[in-house]
Length: 278
Image (cartoon, rainbow, N blue to C red; front, top):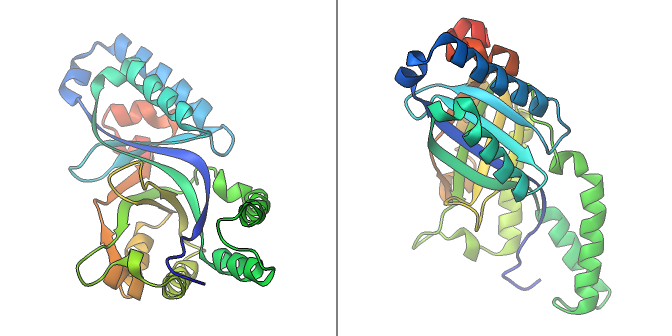
């Protein structure tokens, strides 16, 4: 294969992370009845979205640290659905007391390094040249089969795990080390080794990768879900030692949250941490 070879990807659910600061002084100044009405409305909306099908859900998390107080994670079928989710939050009574501190827009992405290699080899063996209509049709046929086979991963349900860890990342482009100039075979090898580390934690950490190239300021978003927050530390620490992270990885802010289910939103907004998240 000639370089550069661009790895094929499959895209699924549109994803929006919204990180809010709660305007506590204004919220506490509100009369009890108005708070109750606002929380009832918010809880009903969130309950519906928690129970929706994969690729159509929302979930709430109480964030730790100074970066924000509340994370709303939305999965939708398309960007119009995400805009609708934004408007739902903004126009809700409780939305008047939420100040957006950060957001991240992306789409669930499955990178197909291994499949890309196989497709190029198989089509070249059939005498097809890249960029021809025959080549493009054969590639699309292969991708369509994989979309059907991987539908549950492309349109996932938000895991019910107690903890979430979200962070954005890039593949570094520096004067000496540039991921996008590395030959395809080398990139494939490093991605394979990187994936082996993640698979070691499959029993304790659920991972959803979303692509943000051309959509946000970073290239990918990573969501990790677990019932043990220390599993995030162990996994990410071990990954720091593999070549792809040590040489090419560049990471943004980390957000750690605890799931706040819809029926506990009133406790969360009362400041009752134990009542909201146990």
